[in-house]
Image 1 (cartoon, rainbow, N blue to C red):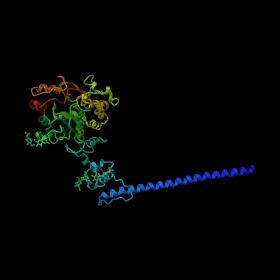
Image 2 (tube, helix red, strand yellow):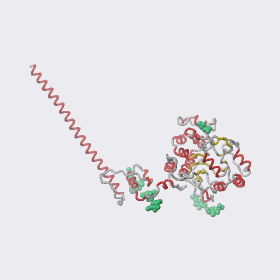
Image 3 (cartoon, helix red, strand yellow):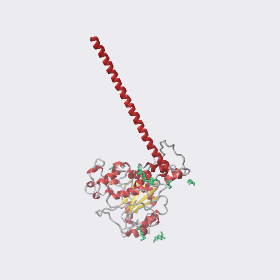
Image 4 (tube, protein in one colour):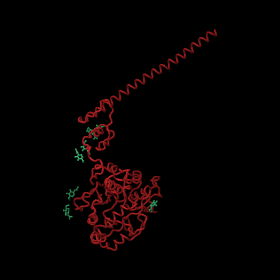
Length: 422
Ligand SMILES: *[C@@H]1O[C@H](CO)[C@@H](O)[C@H](O)[C@H]1NC(C)=O
Ligand SMILES: *[C@@H]1O[C@H](CO)[C@@H](O)[C@H](O)[C@H]1NC(C)=O
Ligand SMILES: *[C@@H]1O[C@H](CO)[C@@H](O)[C@H](O)[C@H]1NC(C)=O
Ligand SMILES: *[C@@H]1O[C@H](CO)[C@@H](O)[C@H](O)[C@H]1NC(C)=O
Ligand SMILES: *[C@@H]1O[C@H](CO)[C@@H](O)[C@H](O)[C@H]1NC(C)=O
Ligand SMILES: *[C@@H]1O[C@H](CO)[C@@H](O)[C@H](O)[C@H]1NC(C)=O
Ligand SMILES: *[C@@H]1O[C@H](CO)[C@@H](O)[C@H](O)[C@H]1NC(C)=O
């Protein structure tokens, strides 16, 4: 009996073992069938997709370019930078991108690619702001140019309408062609044809937008001017001016002073109270701390390195757009604060534009012809001391404001001779 049950239990355990094996086998069979089905399904899906995609490509392809891939070959065409059109920004629309990329026929293979890159767009171009700022932010990693380049100073006029003191500037620029570029950002509603703007300013208007004093649109305009001036690779120094600015020296002196300077000129001061720290908004923390908040005149003189960084800045400018509203007077704080946080090492913290705040109020003193005397101009030219490339100098200002058309006669009488224009 015992033996019998033993045998039976052995048999049943064998049977159980066998059953378990069978289950496992079944499981594997099912799994195999399932994966096989999945594979077929996936293959079919891809085939159909591939087919329709290729069908679209073939449909729009130029038959003369008989580089057509075989029907089931997944094909990703190379990106041809020579023909970027607005449609290539549409990343979702594969069809359109492929069309653009498959048309290299217009590309002249013998043309000098460098020439194309260095070509200066017209002042009034058709790029939108995203395109403009992206292009302006391009900077070479190799600093020595493999071609001859005469560095230029970009004079950027942020105006309401015409450059009021154009006749004076005209005399200033005369004979220095090739050493400067001019950019004018007037109000978009300014009708140029009504004014007979002198020759150097002709055709130098850039695509502009409305600007309100003390608001972020002012910073936008400054950045827009910088971006446009950066499109010309030979612009190495950048000067922001208003229609009320005058030069205090001749072109050669100003050009040399700017080119030889090891520093940038963005005025930046830490000022307590109503016009300084009070304008700081705590919500800018931690990106900008109260101790980092700076104030300065918006009229700067900077180099290309800093100009590229300014047009490429996103975080600080977004912070200002969010938290620096009218009473904050953003144009007096954005650049001074940004430069003092990130680029303070080479900044002089002073501006080269003279101005008279001694009369108080929200706007500086404005001068007319009767104020403009030789003594007055000499005081602006040599009346203070400062540091330049580590040495003390009495040439601290190259430009001055504010002067209107009422001052033009006086200026034209004294300035060209005193400053030795030409
Ligand atoms: C880009 O391609 C279009 C047609 O697809 C052509 O009209 C245009 O001239 C091309 N532009 C350049 C810069 O090759
Ligand atoms: C691609 O462009 C065509 C024509 O404008 C449009 O009909 C289609 O919906 C677009 N496809 C995608 C994925 O956006
Ligand atoms: C995409 O291509 C189609 C066909 O060529 C064209 O009609 C359509 O305007 C293109 N879409 C865009 C956004 O350019
Ligand atoms: C290609 O560019 C070179 C140099 O700019 C020019 O001489 C030549 O005529 C161009 N060829 C065509 C087909 O446009
Ligand atoms: C600008 O002024 C001229 C002359 O008065 C006029 O003919 C022209 O239409 C004006 N242009 C615009 C865009 O207002
Ligand atoms: C106005 O411009 C025209 C052509 O641009 C020029 O011939 C003329 O002398 C200018 N007039 C004045 C007053 O500047
Ligand atoms: C300019 O200001 C920064 C930040 O406040 C400071 O670190 C730097 O020493 C100053 N540079 C000069 C030349 O005064």
